[in-house]
Length: 414
Ligand SMILES: Cc1ncc(COP(=O)(O)O)c(C=O)c1O
Image (cartoon, rainbow, N blue to C red):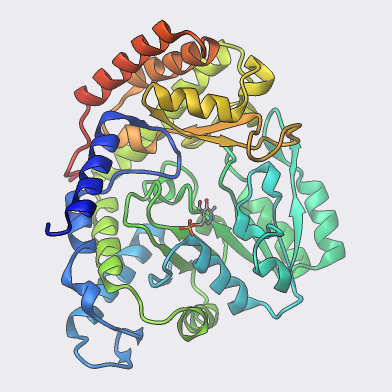
């Protein structure tokens, strides 16, 4: 590479990823083939429009790539229509809102402090100035059970156009049938933002909202799905909705699609269609359960009481007197990356909350099984309980490095 400054930084990032353990639940490692497609000459091409209906010439290869990505996405999630052009998860959500609502309309999503995402209506987003967001919450923070009764009551009163399931920091399975029942009562469309668990759905490790009759799924492609950074919108079977979504992405929100990124999505979907991927997603769940077990044994409170998916949200401040920021920093020191996170009804502030959020998608890609995950959880707790003990931290760091060395990031998955 001619640009030595950037080359050096790429190498440094490769080293950081290789030597540390990645526990941020929204991160993962892609295969060499996904990287190759993402770095391909498709980045040179403008392809505004959709396959067969483009504004520029020279589309014989881009059309084929996008058709393949769509076909594989539909097979993977068992639906009829897919738009693979969203540049990421946030624009996928914004485009869906605009496709189905008028300014001032109401949408019901999970409360941010109970696990929802910024794009589900945080007051700091532009969309919150355009649409009215109403919330549902957990009924019981210790079990993670959603308050479906209150949800119905509020929905009957507010008549949302969309009822949105989905989360960034929630560890239990949602009861999609209950969402649908409420939506039918108020005439709302059901939308599931499955950004975090898309890979788990694709691998059939958790339930697919389409099986219960959800209308739309939005997602990122770079988390458990193990593809390039990007987004996608899936429509179960309603062609009218699919047409509105297409128009909303282009020309409504975006310009030319990033065809290199769509090629990489197609490769990742191909990988996700293999039996090896199914096995991978089941292992993600087993690994998360083992880590939760260690936290439970050590009497560390977990929001929702444990996990049914890939992530755990632990109240380290309430249980150990270590703040989320302190925990994130001290674990960083020993080679474990995760993120501080607000917990439901958090007495602390977002920049130094009570919780940490961590998960198993990336370490499972490395080949970690239950034994290694148990060890990592034990080391995490040891470090958190001894955050000022240099000797213990040094010893833990050595063990983490050794684990990372023993399980290098694979380049191929199939
Ligand atoms: C549930 C959910 N939706 C949407 C997004 C936004 O995705 P992106 O960061 O790719 O825009 C995220 C990202 O964390 C997410 O967790």
